[in-house]
Length: 165
Image (cartoon, rainbow, N blue to C red; front, side, top):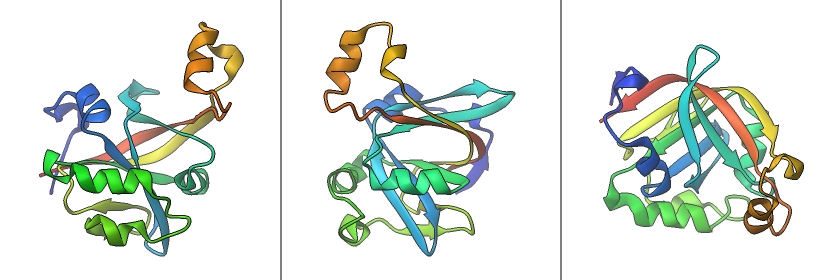
């Protein structure tokens, strides 16, 4: 993989996240977890290129995001989408879902990403906050998206490196 400036990603980021999905991964070689996601964003805030991802409190990956300083967002070719489905429907809390996925983890001291990814964003956590129901301008949106009242935790991270194939 080659390291590039995040400004040079040549793909539609909204399409990457919403339609092609991504893996959010946090932890270290010894203890980590990943999950499939289709909500999030990227931009520029606090004079840094940033990513924003949201995780529900009951997701196992949220535990890793809360206690680690780094996370990765990885995007894959369409041929890998079935593998992402496996990682989005099974919990790493109870089984070794990586064994079933067929993806190859690559380990660093502070983060994990995947050999098969076409784009990897290595992010250093900058900020987090829980979404609050009273802050929705349209209460019907909160009711529709959060019938269980399990509001997402939002994480902002500085994109410290962008790797592409």
